[in-house]
Image (cartoon, rainbow, N blue to C red; front, side, top):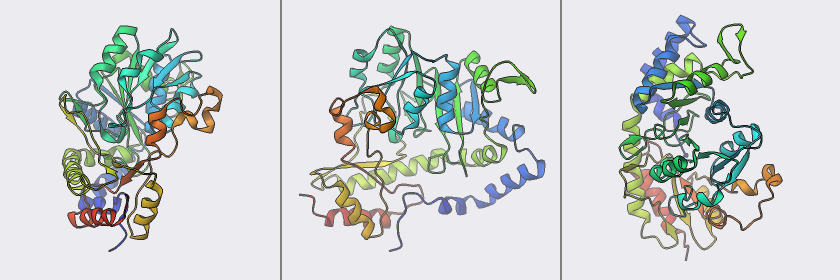
Length: 373
């Protein structure tokens, strides 16, 4: 069998080629590369999709987080609580503003921040919480918002992996003060390059982020403060407008694929399939399908799958508190044991809307043939 990739962007493109090509041609014909109608259209569509009042297109999910914290006034001496088990950017943006990332351990089943441990880490310096909806699974936002309200904290949703997911029948991204998305090519809603977005119901925050993304100016060449250059370009906006129409369909297909994996792998000794809490109306969009491999044999299984033409990825091999970049925080190994253990067990398997049942069965059968016990 031909090698199975983690994601097949060409297969997706072929299915919607006509619409994508027309969108790109239109932007080029109209020379609407920065700002303009195509960006405004996509921003309107995203606000409508997330059921928020405002959306602001930016050049990456990282900048969505960064400009959100900046707009909320997070600065030197502040503390922001988040998870150690996520992509580096989540904590990086806190540090870039001179604030201190404060890590809270994770739930071993969901891989998300353990909401029950947050209050212990709150101090007088705490200004915000960044819950990460990891791999497309929503965090328990009722608990997060309850804690935030009690201590007067901002909630910045890192929804970069979770577009289209729902919690309590509300779209992820609409449940905090701001929601941040990434349109990196591997994401469920993906651009052909970098891209990001912030959604919010707060007009003041929206206007601040709009100004920050454009060098601190509302009117061209009249700069009111120091800002940045962080704009979602017209080409990416037009492409994303096309793809947004298919997002819910693609997410439903991911759920079907995840169910197929679960059916095959749930009885395999030494493998733990993804779990999540169904006490609340929750919609997992499976940006990643991530298993846990027991007995310390994760790396062996990864190597074995590679020999059979099956791609896999480790998200994430090292928790953030153990990264060299955060040595200055002086967090000792063993202080966040769940994240540390999980980082040695997780393995993500290929998942994308276009993958067929034959390939899923092939992957499942090869995992079965690798003796884990």
